[in-house]
Amino acid sequence: MPSQFSPSARGKLASPLASALAVVAAASLFVGGAHATDAPRLVEKDGRHALMVDGAPFLMLGVQANNAANYPSQLPKVWPAVKALHANTLEIPVAWEQIEPVEGQFDFSYVDVLLKQARENDVRLVLLWFGTWKNNGPNYAPEWVKLDNKRFPRVITAKGETRNSLSPHFPATLEADKKAFAALMRHLKTADPDHTVIMIQPENETGTYNAVRDHSPTAQKLFEGPVPAQLVKAMGKKPGTWSQVFGKDADEFFHAWSIGRFVDEVAAAGKRELALPMYVNAALRDPFNYQDPYTYSSGGPTWNVLDVWKAAAPSIDAIAPDIYMRESANVRKTLEQYARPDNALFVPEIGDDKGFARFFYDVLGAHALGFSPFGLDYTGYSNYPLGAKTVDAQALENFAVHYRLLAPMAREWARLSYTGDVWGVGEADDRKAETLKLGDRWTATVSYGEWQFGSIDAPWMGKADKQPNREVPDGGALIARLSANEFLVTGYRARVSFGSAKGERFMMARVEEGHFENGQWVFDRLWNGDQTDYGLNLTTLPQVLKVKLATY
Picture 1 (cartoon, rainbow, N blue to C red):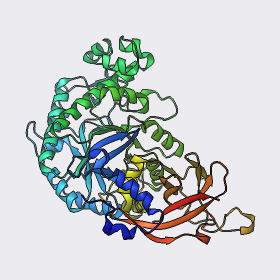
Picture 2: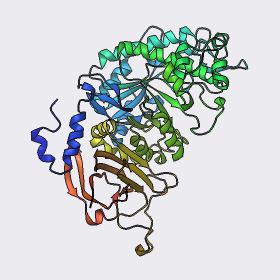
Picture 3: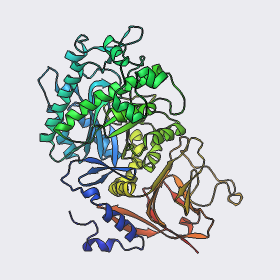
């Protein structure tokens, strides 16, 4: 692969700021020695993470199809939505019942159609394996599995009631799931040599509702035995039974460990066939307050058992939150809980109505691998009240306005996020301005509801009308450091005002508006005068700025 900044391309970099971005891109073009022929993989450096695709960091501008979109007849209703969103990645299910309707007889015709059409649409895929668990239940398992309680036992509650969730404690279930998943990965190794599929999700929102754990005799015997040494060491505990080691949390930790080990074995079996990155997704609990485990999916990778899951499932590369909470404080706390030095942040599902779109900026500002609203396709389903009442062109446009900003520079953002400092903020519920600390020297205040000229609260402005279409918070901004005093800025319906953290006299020495073409920064014009006197006012247009700050 030639350098992105070859001599023939240097004419486009005709600006004092271009060299900073060129250095960042050139230094990170082959991060970790990766090449375009490599399989996708997750990498980590200094607590930051990147999904390497074709040898370079990749930002997933994703969309997850509805659950029943996983048939060739439905795909024509999916691709137009992907295109309208400017998405580069489609998350879509592959159901166990689809590929192994009869035990031992596999059918990958749907997978082959999906791969072919994804290539034709120039879209990458994340495959969601709906196997033993999909939102706690086995509904996507074949009938020969989900209707045979004797061979594939379900969870039994403390009261002796049978739940729909399959138990993680029985080898027959594990071996059947492993066999099917391994067969899928073996097929992908042959059918997808160019790695259209960049990531896999084994199972979906694991855990059990209305039961903290399995109380069957088999499970109870394990619960009354010793905590595995691997978990004792990882948690810094002393050996003992589950009750002795974990007290009031013993039931939930036992279930989390058991499900985590099950999923890990499934993932490991798949990776032995094709070593693609794999993640699990979490149905969340309250990010701040205690919740009775009976009220959420106990045993799934909720924030309070992340360390248990990390110990139980080393074959899983990331644990990802599915976000359907609407409150900005809850969303930000969830991102904080899952964005850890030992865990790459990825939001594979988020609600699909307008109020969720602003969180795109919070997610990318937290160095995330990607972002994906759920259910934005034309297959005729809406999951309201979790999302939009109607999935139509406007529902897609609520997210497309943000994807259009990043689509031309997705690779560049992914590199900057992995190798340097980035910040992002979406408009909070209180709609107040927020100040970001950009290191020790500079700050940036992001505010909303302002016109491009002046300040709506300034007495000399008189009685200015409020901006229209502001019923739902929808603004946000992203900032990436290019060098000590240079920043890349973009956003939507937000004002970005820089400041000095040390109270120094400063100015925006240069503000370039430009765009990216094939990885190159192309200078369009300078902002000055009215365009900079009242901060940098980002509108509904896809504007990208490079800003140089200086003291005087």
